[in-house]
Amino acid sequence: MGLKVLNVEARDIHVVFEMSLSELRHVRDAIDAAHINYASEEDPKLALSVKYLTGDFFPFIDELVEDLEKNVTRPDRKRG
Image 1 (cartoon, one colour):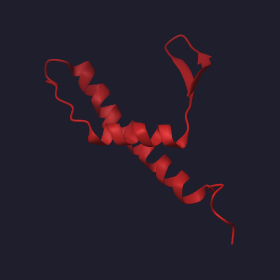
Image 2: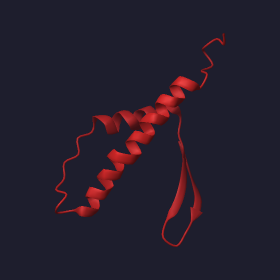
Image 3: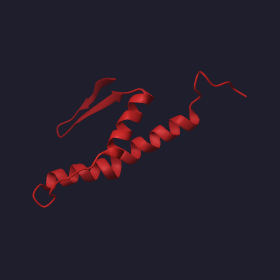
Image 4: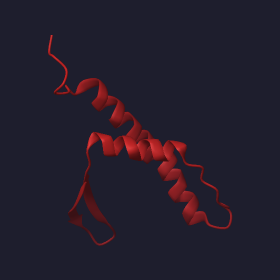
């Protein structure tokens, strides 16, 4: 796994993660199995983070893994 800073702006830093498909599966499976307990009324910033994780990041990773598994030719598979 690798990390590269792509762009630094006044309000944010953009990074690129380099991960193998098996690492992406681990991230997806861990998020899928996780139970997040917090009091959103007491910590609205955490509520935004959880909303991003469950509503944006996880669906993106899940779809990416599924797409890679379906559409990328693995070296151990013969082409027909």
